[in-house]
Amino acid sequence: MAAPLSRRKSISYSKWGYFFIAPFFIIYAIFSLIPLIDTFKNSFFEYYYSQLKWTGPNFVGFDNYKMVLSGDLMKYFGNTFIIWIIGFIPQIVVSLALASWFTDLRLKLKATGFFKVVIYLPNVIMAAAISMLFYSIFSEYAIGPINSILLNAGAITEPYKFFSYTTSTRLIIAGINFLMWYGNTTIMLMAAIMGVDTSLYESAQIDGANPTQTFWKITIPLIRPILLYVLVTSLIGGIQMFDIPSVITNAKGAPNRTTMTVVMYLNNYLTTGKNYGMAGAVSVILFIVAAVLSLLVFYLMRDKDAPKKKLKKKKGANLL
Image (tube, rainbow, N blue to C red):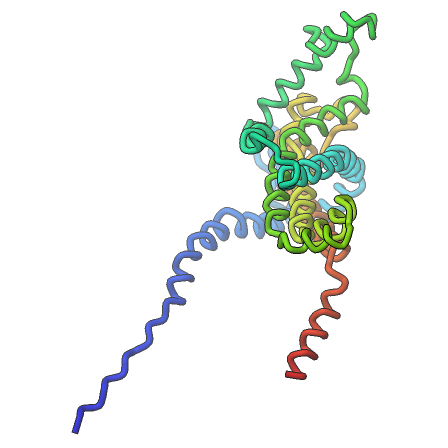
């Protein structure tokens, strides 16, 4: 009689997945989660440096929040959103146009790889460096290139003070943000469009759809997840705007604090030795606003037909 075959023990590789993702969670907990919890805790305490000595931490409850909200915080939120919107609208429009052109095989564009590199290059330059460059270009004291061109063309009779007016200063800051990020957005949208099944475009072309109809009826709905990602990340980045307006206005939010962003306002508490508890309160409010706006964007851009599709799929499975 033959000996029974020994059973092989099944080997589970699932534990290795946890092993490889563990470093991310450890680093996140140390450098993000713990500081976040500590910020929430500090926002309820009074803690500042005055006359060569530290005062606190003294528990004050919600007093820090009351003082912050009774000040000019809402004004700085308004400044931040205005500058972000001015930069984001042309960013998404130009990025969509470039992504559509670069992925359209009918245009047969040449040297697309070169142009992709060129439009992405500003994203790898330090924000402080490109801000100083633009400050020099629009300078009114050393008469920068823009003022020189306008003076030589006879458009103006004296150097225009770009950084003395709210509109021009906001436009310059928004323009720098646009220049730095439109290339990154274009690359992501190109990847999304290239993931769309080409047979859908061929079917639409056979049915007589023009490029505009194809773009709005096929491309936009199918790349909605990437559009959502771009909008949310851009929104969070816009709320955290700091380096560009800080360099352009020397951290003063000139003119008349109309370019003072929320993070610049927060930085003032950290660098001037003011109440660190109030800085914590500003951080918590900023976190809540970013979370609420992100959830709102997810809700507004959700696929409204998803529940119907899921129900239809479930019914079809039941019939089988």
